[in-house]
Image (cartoon, rainbow over all chains, first blue to last red; front, side, top):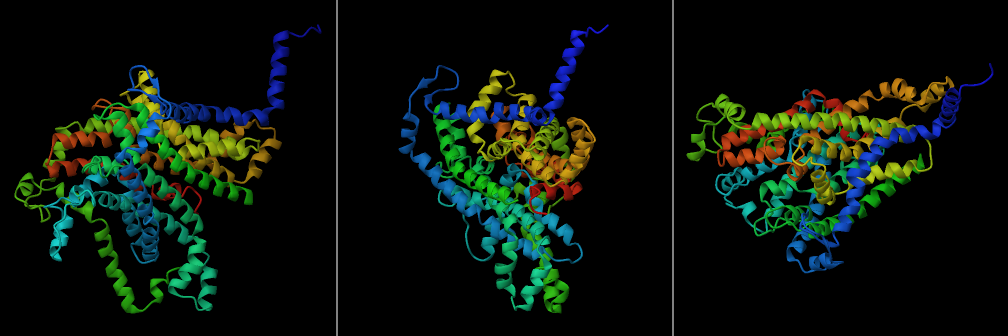
Length: 308
Length: 282
């Protein structure tokens, strides 16, 4: 009986093939679900959005190819211009969260009793939904009853209607956004400060470095990883800002607090009409701005990987 | 340690610091304290203009009772749980697999696939809005929790994979190599060698993703409508429309909506912070 049952033979060689290629094949098996999900819900939609931006489409009927028309229209759209400027304000002012967070972290980096609780309570705003933060701040800014005007009244100023004033409203919202973002940067720096090399501080002290000089030349260089992450999350947060605007002013007054992400939502999905193509074009512009930063982040990560 | 430890400074600065701490904290949390006080005030305080004074009577049970028994709030909370928990499980599972593949194996396209996940995670999600809404409609999942969960899993996988891969890279690779020499199958290495070592990363990610998804507002508005599927972040806006200008109820509602991630944070603080720093700052 030397005849081999063919099914067993093939099973054996199949197992053999997998065994031989196990190291090469396994990573792809492990990657498959994540890649499939990601391609379906993230990569493909990015491509689709870019494609839709060349069409005139209400989301239901036939889409009509219009070439660059949506982008040409954007150039003359004053609401788009306002959104773009506001995005720039968000980007620049949001970065204040980084020095702000560092300042609070330095203030809290002590070992007195109860300091752990203090640190967690200072971090509190970040854990709360932006929807709630927006509500809380819109009450804080209330024109007559708001706490802000109460405080201003004590020193003989005001009253001001922050969210009702087209020139101030965006800054009011950014201030609300800075609150949780500063808390985030603070926690990054607190963890970073833990890892600062005490010997270098001692060496600095021996060399007579104190206060600002110590901070600038010895501490901040060692906090570089924390600063990098703070920078990344703050930029992303600034460009994604939507919740606060939607809750606090809904884009108003007179559309002066719109940013790109909010404006595209308005154009594509709200009562202002279902202009999917136009909305997609706005999103593509936002994406291109973000791409500059993404490229920079990836480049830094790549440089670090190579350095390992 | 920097700044100079407080015990080594002058007595007067020590005292200043000790009194400055609670003051600073109260200033920092003032908006929240105000809302907490609002939520126990009676309605009459607001009509009489007593916004920032002490409550004229203590109405905590009344106000929170209204939220829990006289509104859609419990429904929204349940929806949030049913959206958040499956997302956490799904995203963590997918990223454990993907992180293992990218962290352990050296193959040519490794770094590119990794960068694809990182880049996708940084993308402004507004660019996904129109197509994802369309996809969800086409699959008949618009205004369902499933539709929201599937998208959240996919999008969070980017961030989670970044995190898991970096964590696995920092593990001692010798353990895996030793197991290979023993002839143990790759999936067994994953399950019996790597997963047990990943427990802290899994805990950190779970807490973090829980908070992110619970607090998501944008996708809730884009992919759902109405109390049968909306999570609490979107629900709170309809709740507020229902109780317009009833600040005591809106405050109580907001506190209820904000509570679960806050509890999560206080219970799992260590993991939470490890997650936030992306494992890069140790």
